[in-house]
Length: 226
Ligand code: ADP
Ligand code: 5GP
Image (cartoon, rainbow, N blue to C red; front, side, top):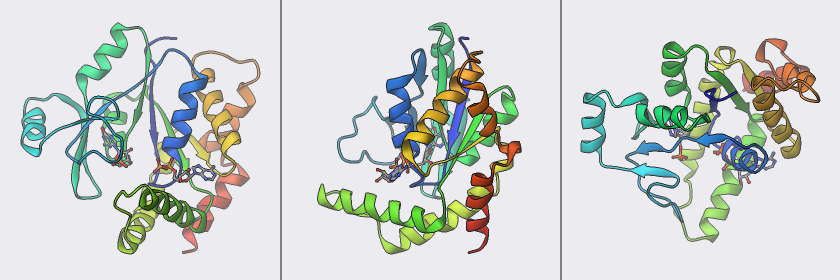
């Protein structure tokens, strides 16, 4: 079972962080990769916990030294990357590893490691995505963090439509509508890929992108209609 690489990607605001943090409480033996980034820490984030926060100069040195499994400039602003050493540590510890990375980074890893198990989280429709982006922004405002701007919301919605175009490259697609359902689907995928069959096989199969479930088709067509 050890040594499986899981990749999860989603448009910003889809609920990926919420899903991943619930998964952590449900599944053992799964390491969560801590990426390097040049963006500033937000809220209560701590260096070495959510991210390794670093400078552009240091990040570019790491690129030149070939220290990244993948890296990307996300939202055209900041660098984000997964260090090769993170993968090696998980392997040595006999653990599976989960990468929470954007579509550009996921494409790079798929090329290098086609055996990686790829999961795309889809928001139910653009209206719900917009509402989640706004709700999160209000929560951040209440906590005196910098709120997301209207222009930023528009940009994230446009990016979501672009990212959704790559969904067929992912093995699984989860529609994050009802949270508990999406969490149990994510858990079922992880357990199924580890070889468990009882109680998870049908759920995992229904989440395959190529199964094109009615729920998935409805979400994708809602985004195409915009
Ligand atoms: P991401 O990590 O994909 O950017 P978050 O996990 O921060 O997204 O979720 C964005 C917002 O949507 C948060 O306010 C979160 O509480 C909310 N949210 C996430 N999943 C659901 C869900 N299934 N139903 C309703 N709200 C959700
Ligand atoms: P945030 O700044 O909100 O934490 O993350 C923004 C985006 O960057 C998310 O889509 C997240 O998945 C992506 N991301 C985080 N770490 C990495 C990484 O190491 N590589 C890539 N390519 N994307 C990352």
